[in-house]
Image (tube, rainbow, N blue to C red; front, side, top):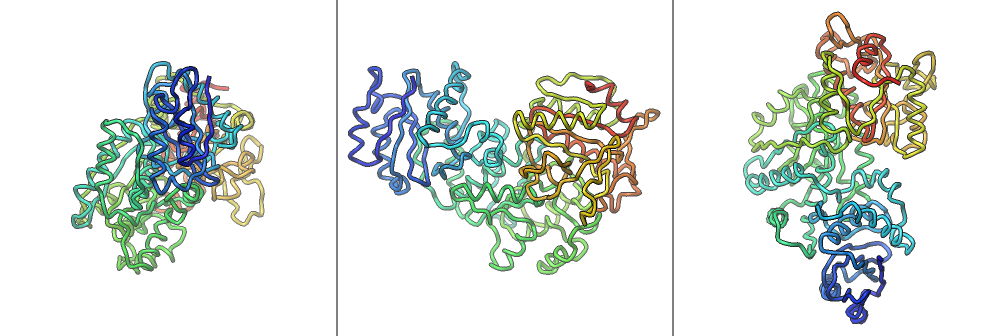
Length: 571
């Protein structure tokens, strides 16, 4: 039976903790427990085998001295593995609950395998509800898991390849951060491999180190202790920022950073804001982390949305008007940088081409370039096999149908039915949306409410780019690539427009430029069929990898739908 005992957090109450017993066990001095320290605004979560001694240590910590109460969570079945897991669980969910700002760093959160873990995780949900009744947390687990605070929490558990990438990054910093040009670390990974999560995790790690938060968690000696030691040995990384080329995701992350200790909304920037801050202060960033760096822009390919700002940034940095790029801005305004990248999510010609991207890194600057990668699929429950199958399908050459395990993948004959099924999923679990390729006109002046027409029925494009997924009207609108790239959904309905079609004679998917309405998307490639097709299939690959639990598809082109019928279950 789980017990939660509350005490005032002061020296006098420690004697009461010392005498805490349950079921014949010395819970206060010789039993595995998890505890929560808090005041009205902040909290700290920890685990220990000796609560009395541990709390005595915390009373010497200036940060902890601001906290008023302690809740001790115990159970006769707890052991060391269980409390490590429960501590991690509470940190992850409390950090996203919004009740408190956590004093915890994120360097000790790890996934521990142990006997009967699944049964204990069910008990953790009961513990959460008990804490909720006591007023220590305010939201349900389900609502938290659908929140942006949870999706983009810096307290997420890292997977094995993310930890390996982190090690590579810390090693590169230790070796190259003081060399001419510093370190430029490229982290490559496909959709759903956790690039954004690792980027945010690193922001929190470096932000805590920058203010030298004293970390006094009880940590057993293991390989991760070495990792923390390596991180703390990296000095001088104080002025840091994260660069988000997409406005929608940038706004979401600013909201998240506003609720996390040592992270601030102004740390989240566009490339142009990086230049503005550099010119204003005259100081380079010690570190810039660039998420979605495949969306960094250039002027000499395709069209831009704001030439004035782009050209002004180039001029202010002494760059050529036509060859200067947003990657150059990052290089010139920082001493070190981490660039997360996926070439298959380049969706416009103005995204810096891959060859040019690496040429800038390796030949235009003296920076040491280090590459690492992520491969494990974290978003789609269908795993890497689902992603590989999608790529095969979008090549147009797929002839063998595969069953995607643990993933709800469907092709619909009726677009409206697909949309109704997504709406039903939205009512059931939330965070379900319908998106489409840019195969219908966008009425920017809003003279027409509905410009998407499919099977004689009219639908409305998304009414805003800014954090569209979280708006109340989103479920009744159709999102585009620029509203969902970088986001997770539970279920995603994808309408494939007439911008891509299928030729059954040549067994090829091809682009129809006249049915593609993104002027910036086809500028410079409208008369280059292969390049335009590659951009469009990248868009649809990105759209079809947003759903965690499932993806529902409707294809407008008859021949394409017949091709997909042979490969996907039809409804």
